[in-house]
Length: 120
Image (tube, rainbow, N blue to C red; front, side, top):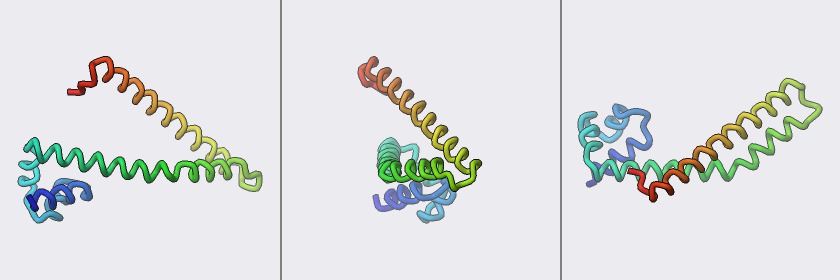
């Protein structure tokens, strides 16, 4: 359905259902009704997943540059100490967040494997 394509595109780019409805030229109730349809909901979830994977890949490709920049600032003796400490703190916080997320993903994968991969 061409209307569904407009709604999907709007949902993926808008910050709210109301904004998506305006962008797609439909009512808010139309979007809410479409979201109740199993096939539409599956298409939306798949499109959202693709969008997130693309964004994640883009960020990951820049991760080494970002880490290098923070490390350069942290190690530059010409930069004020408070800026270097802030860079070090930022690097540590992000590393800890990454490790926590990786641990959660590992545990989730183990739980899913223990249940035979059935997530529903």
